[in-house]
Image 1 (cartoon, helix red, strand yellow):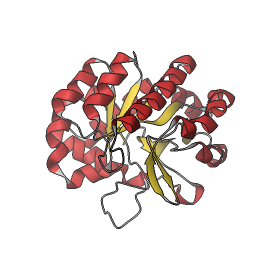
Image 2 (cartoon, rainbow, N blue to C red; image 1 turned 90 degrees about the horizontal axis):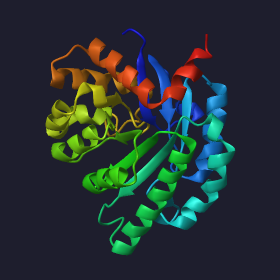
Image 3 (cartoon, rainbow, N blue to C red; image 1 turned 180 degrees about the horizontal axis):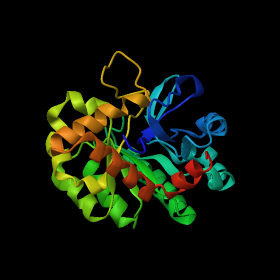
Length: 261
């Protein structure tokens, strides 16, 4: 395929890295402690691994998982400014209103505060945001619009098509991992979102075609071929269009890729 794929949302470590036909990897963090590892990986593969930095709405600890708090965000605040020139985006940030993870209105309100603070940082730095929206698709898009966010990728979006189209009207992009190929639930959604608003992702090492196996970036062709089949297009057309969309959304990718030649 001309140019190759761009994986717009993955979680990479050095031992998991695999290019496999992917020309660029947009890799996100979930908490402040992951940034150093990601930057080291980006140093090792400077024209392939494109760092995003953000604090996820659900935080995992040895004792389990909890809804993010402003205290969880605090260690990241200085790092945004310190490493802003190395980042291609802010993420993974967003909302996760899964009932057993975020059971109270107080926790949801705190998530919104953390999300808003990171959206403000993205605006100040003029960077796009890489957004998580589990069990909160409508709320996430409404909040993004309310906050005036313009450069947005909604990764692995699973909300209603009518809600997604509100995001399309706002100029947002949507990406889908290989797992969607095994679940026709997303078919209607993908059919209705214009190709001009779609990017590819793997969400490596999660959301691969087989739940029992670690997902890798080279599986991105599965997403591409599924989207092509749903839309009645060639995989080559989808590959080309989604790469173009990725460069529009993450303009710093192009500059970093040019440094490989």
